[in-house]
Amino acid sequence: MPTHCNTMIDLSHKQPSAGARFSLLIPTWNNLKYLQLCLKSITRNSAFPHQIIIHVNEGTDGTLAWVQEKGFSYTYSRSNIGVCWAMNAMRRLVDTDYIVFLNDDMYVCPGWDTALDEEIRSLPDNRFYLSSTLIQPRKFWCKSVIAPVSFGEDTESFREEDLLKHFMDVPHGDWSGSTWPPTLVHREMWDLIGGYSVEFSPGIYSDTDFSAKLFLSGVRYFKGVNTSRVYHFEARSTGRVKKNKGSRQFLLKWGIVSSAFMKQVLYRGDPFPLRRQKERSIKPALWRSRMKRIWVLFSGTGNTTKLWERENRLVP
Image (cartoon, rainbow, N blue to C red):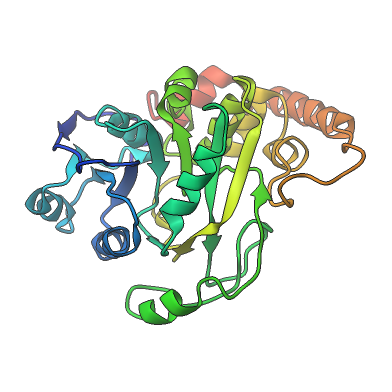
């Protein structure tokens, strides 16, 4: 599939729900069963009405017809344009102050939105980036995720009522380093940093880049909210698409490897608020990043013009 936006994007804007609190942006790519379950969870488990905006990539599995039939606001591309273009397209339809990024293979649990709302109301300004806490059925490397805790690995094996009874059983805690969805940001901050960087299309490391842009803009409040919980099937749509070299792009853009940025700048997965008497030194990580960047540039893989052209298929 192409990794650049080579197609027109259609938009269909419906009136938002009366009193909508958040605008939920959900990109989807021929994943109708998961999308339907995601939207069912929003209807069933949300305390507030929310504006729902869906980006339909291709939609050849019946997604487009179903979204149109149900009357959702949506954007549509005839080919898969990836996350970055999709998110920026959906932003044009946003009617509320708060933008939530949800994957189509996520199921929101009761209290997910009230916990985020309470967090927002406790803050003095809009300079924040919040995440819900994920529950995943398979082992995962980051401490921010509750895993492995399985309530089913796909829509067929999903134990919905079991999840609703036990989703808060595993103790966790608030955590630092909000990066990947579900995420919440104020529309003013989104617009200030220019949304998602399309050079990361189809989207690998675009979420880390989004956090880096927020950090550069002055945001320091990156918090994962424990009581806002979301079950994530990990349907892995990314496995069906040709990936961009996101880690290399992040290094060339920011001058630091993404792992060091997450671990030593945002402290992703560490308890929130941070409780350390002495900050970790980032100098070794920056030195290693410089050495890696030099290697990438001199190895011939770091020419940004050729990299952009090759990975977006603008030249043979």
